[in-house]
Structure formats: structure tokens, C-alpha cells
Length: 231
Length: 274
Image: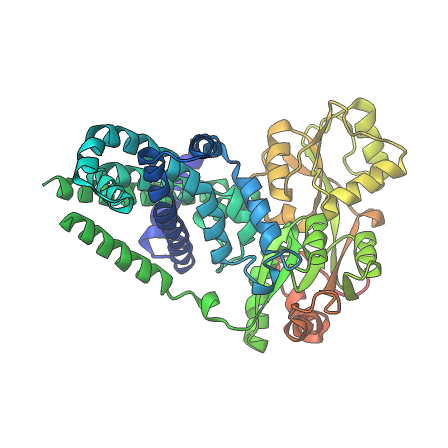
């Protein structure tokens, strides 16, 4: 328990004096995870709704795949992205390995199946409710997708937060493709992994507390937004 | 829909704030990627060296700290511009295979055998590390191995094989597949013997009941070498900037910077011939 109280004091100290390096790390964590979560929403949500409202060949396969990929191991995704972006890989000429961009790509791949699967689930219910009316209205497919997303925006917020939560807490993929480079690709989670390795358990725990506080803050903002929506 | 617009606007603000966040390393245009070992990163050496180098040359060094085996693999795929690693045999093979050029000795320190205070194998104070390993194997005392093909792991395996022992798979021999720090953390909990480089140990905080039992055997010398990734094989390598780093490390200025690094007053890396 001594470790925990020391960690608490360290965490307060770090935040209190606005440690520059820590602020950079927090900024990068938020930047990478929010970008990946938003991108996954842009890619995954329309696919998820389309799966709910239309019938096409391969639909069942796609649903199965998106559900199965919920358990995609981050470190495998990291490895695949690594091999693709490596100088000896197909995209090597762009020099993207060990950059924040590579981390966003890896997280986007991790998050998209989550967004697709969850969006499909709630859109399925909405479509059963509103599908008939939309078809009578003669709404086109893209318009139907947009309307379903608008009706289900509270659920979309939950899905966004789920995706963001997965991204901000993830370490396996980003440490492989980002390289945990100080001041460049070091995030909250990779910093925690490093401090743990150094045996600086109290500092690692302190960083963990800061990360949790960050997560709570993002969720609180979302909660307030959702409440404003309902009015 | 108004809520959606507010949400989008808020997100746009947050993202633009984050992506324009003033980060010194982001602004640095000239940089090289260095694949190196956990011991050099975790001991804080790079935190000391790189600012000095950056000030002198304007070049930033982005360190990817992994085990020596993985660092060599990163270099062999062309994903780093230079290496700073510690496994002489592996380094020579890397150069012989055409992956790297101009291997130079940069610095050295040594490995130490760390173990539990009550020392069940009775190795404390031995000079001969082979004898210590033999005693540990004889009473089958817990031994934590990196098991990750790092320079430290390769050194440890060489000692076992010089004794004609193959401990792999034995219940007392724990192959962890982890970095130095994680291995030390686990060894603390298991009260196991463990081979570590002195720099990582000096910087390690969570020592529990472990202490240095065997040191000073000349077999335990740990030389670090700098290698440039071969630009003939990987044209995208930053030849010029990585050459500046390579030369600086072996220059009087670089060597003085290495020598001046201390943890709690203890010098952890030495230059010149051991």
C-alpha cells in the first residue's frame, strides 16, 4: 500500500507542476486515440448501418467477420502494420514506421470492427422500428443510413466512447509500430510500460492514475453533451 | 442536430489544439532513428547523451529501445539508420551479412549476477561466473532468464553452454521473454538469480531482497558497438546524419559525454579498451 500512496502523491505532483514531458505525452495519447476513434467511426458506422438495412451477398460473412475481429489481438495488428510500413515492406518508401501516423493506422484497424459490430447491433433494432416508414417515404439508401445514425446518435456516442476507451488504453500495437520514442511516439500506456520495466512502480502507477483521470474527463464531457442533446 | 454541430465543433477544437501542441521533437526536422537496447534507454544514458548531441549538431535521435536481437532485426529490415547494441558475435554477423557497415566499439560496462540475500546456492563473492552458474544448476535454484534473444540473454546462454548445460525447460529455469526491467521485477518476486547489466541494475528501483552476488569476472565484460545500417542495401537510410552520430559517439566529445554520465554518483559506462 505504501506504493499506492506514493503513486498518488507523485500523480498530484506531476499534474500540479504541469510537467512538460507529461503534457506532451498526454497530448499525443489524446491526439492519436481521438483521431483513431473518429476515423473508425467515419469508416465503421456507415458500414454497420448498411449491414443492418440492406441485404447483399457476403453480408452474413461481413457481420461474422466484424464480430470475430472484436477479439483482434493488438500485438498481431501491430506486427502486420509494422511489416507493411517497414522499409522492406510494400509501403516502406513513405517512411511512416515509428511515427504517430503508424500508431493511428494500427488503432484504426483495431477499432473499426468494434464500431461496425456495435453499430450494426443498434441499427438493426432501429431499422425494425423505422425501416418501414423510411421505405414508404422512398428514402435512398445513403439517406436512410444518415437518418438511422441521427436517430441513434446517443448510441453512436457510446460506441465512440467504447472505441476511444479501447484506443487510449491500448499498448500492444502502438509500442510495436511507434517504437515508444521519447518525445515523439511515447504515449501514456507505453510510458507506463517503460516505467514498470525500470522498476519505477510508483511512477508507473502515478501515470496510470493520470490516464484514468483523463479517461474520466473525456467520458464526462461526452455525458454532458448527451444530456444537452436530449433537451 | 444542433447538439451534433456543437459536438463536432468541440472535437475539431480539441484535435486542432492537440495536433499543434508544441512538442520540441516534432519541430526537429533532422533526425535519425536509432535501434538500441533496453539497457541504454532504461539506464537513462540516452536522456543524458541525446540533448548534448542535439545541441552540438542540430540532429535529433529517435531511440527505439528493444533487445539486441530485435534491434539487429530492425536494422536488417532497414527500419533504423544506426544501431547501438551489445552482442559482438551478432554485430559481426550483421556486418558480414551486408546489413551494416563500419562497426565501432563505443563503450563498455559489465554484467553482474544478482540473487537473493540468503543465497541458497552459496555463490556470493565468487569471482568465477561459470562456477556460480554451475552451483545454481546443481541445487536447481530459481534462475530468471530474459529469454528474449537480447545481448544479456545471449551472454547468459554462452555461459551455460560453456558449462555444457542446457537449462532450458527445467522447472527452476524461468524463461521470461521480457526486457531487463521486467525480468528484474519478476526475479524480485520469485527470489531468483538473474544476470543483468550493471547499468540497468544501478537504475532499478524495485530491488526487493536481491543484491549483487558475483561481479568482476572478465567474461562478464559488456562492450557496446555502433553500426551504420548499410545504405547500399537500404537507399532510404539517412546516411549523412547517421554518420554524424556515429562519428560523434567515437569522438572525444562523445566519449566525454558518455564518461560524464552518473547515476547516484556511480559511472555506468566506460570508454576505451576494457
